[in-house]
Image (cartoon, rainbow, N blue to C red):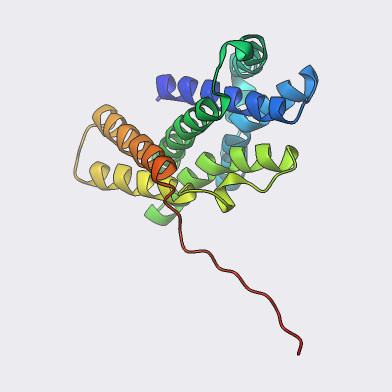
Length: 203
């Protein structure tokens, strides 16, 4: 899981930096948004599951990595001809990878299935929610193509294959590929859940 975790926090840090850049933040703002996006979901998960000490506090190299990735993104942004596509790809990679990591953590702690799934979803979506709130926009999880649903499907697939006895590494690879493909297809096809629209009438 360490490899996929490093990919996930790097991807999410870069997506956070791009989001900060779209809001014209200074370098400090970029670093903060990159950090929160990459490590915020895991922090919330650890607090909710009672998993202490919180992961990144025991691995300061993760802090250096995410802040470095965020600042590097500001340096190479001029080379990126389509930031929106890159942002969506990085965010999709982080969503799926963190969902799998969250499942693995709760599974290793012996939690029941529903808690394992919720742990995966919290890890997958909360960093993006914090990023969007700090960037003063409605979180992508609440307004765009399938997002939290992708996290849910990825977690369910991972658990299903686990119960079938598939090895962890192969299970992780299959679930990551399937989850990423689903998210990218949802973006391309603009797949959405039904929207609830309600307006109170007082006549």
